[in-house]
Amino acid sequence: MIIVKDLTKIYKLTKKQMQEQKTKKNMKVAVKQLSLNAEPGQIYGLLGPNGAGKTTALRCIATLLKPTDGSISVCGYDTVKESEKVRKSIGFLTNEIKLDPQFSPKYMFQFFGRLHGLDEETINKRREELFEYFGITDFQDKKIDELSTGMKQKASIAVSLVHDPEVVIFDEPTNGLDIVTARNVTDYLKLLKEKGKTIIISTHIMSEAEKLCDKIGIIISGEKVMEGSLNEILTDTYTKELEDAFFELYKKHSKEEA
Ligand SMILES: Nc1ncnc2c1ncn2[C@@H]1O[C@H](COP(=O)(O)OP(=O)(O)OP(=O)(O)O)[C@@H](O)[C@H]1O
Image (cartoon, rainbow, N blue to C red; front, top):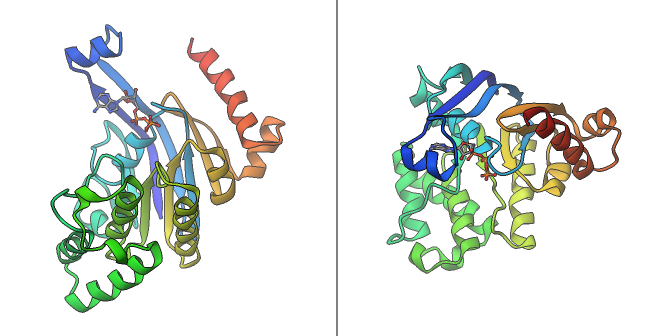
């Protein structure tokens, strides 16, 4: 279970970042009073355009960033006060965390398994299962450096799941993957859901959110502008497709911002 209450995250900008973002303000509100609940046996999708604050929100949930305001609990643990316990309960995937290029998927899997305090037998069993599922076995001994983007992404996913976490936090899990591999990953997320895990993902792929997510939170400029099941969102926006609903909301809320 993930409970996010009034999460606000403000970044302090360096002079260089202010120049890059063409702003005179030295603060950036990346997430503003975001609240959401993701429950066991459910896939929650955070859907938003580039720069909406999805990665920031997920990094706060995964304890990698401290909220400026608000609170987050994961499996009943506070992400600031009990971050160690939260980290044990989650599998986190983000594009910014890279596997060490010098090592192989097999080595990285074992390394993270040990870090989570698993015994060798459990690590080997998990490796066989996950590497087989994601088709990693054939390249498990190659250096990460020599792998394609898709192979690296699959290896990162397997490594993030080594300890069979209760909560899965995946930032754009199918980013850079071909349709076969992407389907492989989304099917696995469905399997995890069936096992009763709590899953939250970010995406800007409408069809992925439509097919995969039980609940969708649409986030624009750091604020959640709508939340519900696909049907609820379509009904509330008088649209037939998520893409149309998204554009309606985007037009409305970017107008409000201007
Ligand atoms: N470390 C940082 N320092 C300053 N500003 C940041 C930092 N990280 C993100 N931002 C800014 O915060 C806002 C939200 O960024 P974030 O990466 O959370 O968005 P996102 O929805 O994940 O975008 P994308 O879909 O492009 O990955 C953006 O305006 C971004 O420029």
